[in-house]
Length: 416
Image (cartoon, rainbow, N blue to C red; front, side):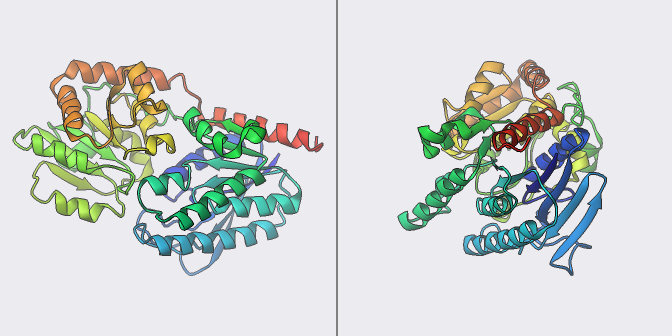
């Protein structure tokens, strides 16, 4: 099967969606599929095109399984919403032009959102080739932006809601990561088209993230950053507007007299400068830049407790992929997520950590105190999380599910 895939990031671009799709493409390659990836030049880490990649609007790379078309992403600061919107528009226009004009004879097209607009590039290319179009939703937009207060005003919100529904209507199938997201999208497509919404979860690479004992956190990451002998409470990921990282700083205030406890924020993002200013008086808070993706397992294993602090409402429209990576590393989680959501229910049912209501500082701090004070609790929660993800699907398994969906859709069009 020949697949054309539109994705905002792809290795070596260090972004969660890029890592996800890169691994799935590896699964497609194992299945013998030929692919054309339409993506951006690497830019995620520093919000600029990385050294060695500039100088051209587009680059074409040949691979063992096909080719990669990398296009200029028009980098813009994530906090500058108008500039980001223009950047998405520019990148989508390029992607649509290069993807549609490509001579690659795709049997099916897959596009990933966000950005939502990339769906139009995928649909345009699929329509030109008269092949199925599958729209993969990682985060439900504009819901996430509305919850964060990034999109305001009924006209602006209404415009993007109409775009969202329009794209769902154009797609032959819409894939989401969880039942919560399926309910969200299903309500928007209506009963008539609800069957096109399919749940294909992201995966956990339990081989790449090797399990270590929850009590064994000694590694080169800890040595490099002076964390040896400390009880490390970590947030690892994008330091953006989706996370209530002020909760971590509030908890750090409560532990400021504990010289054995240190809070680490490992990552970059538009919210980091302001967060660093807020934490300037806290000697137990450290900021560390993104590490190479090859060190992910080591970074996760360096922590005694991991934080997943989502703002209110986001757990209904977003599933942080890092959550499952944390479980794979056998580390306990303290999450601020809406009660009744899939994420909150999972934490409660597996015993992999503590879930509290979003933006509740006393509850968040109390949950952390319980984990910090009990090595036994940390150990059992970490083991429970690892046991759960070991039953989960692999990257190859996700690729198989997508392959089955593509075959179903192609057969439905009489192409097989």
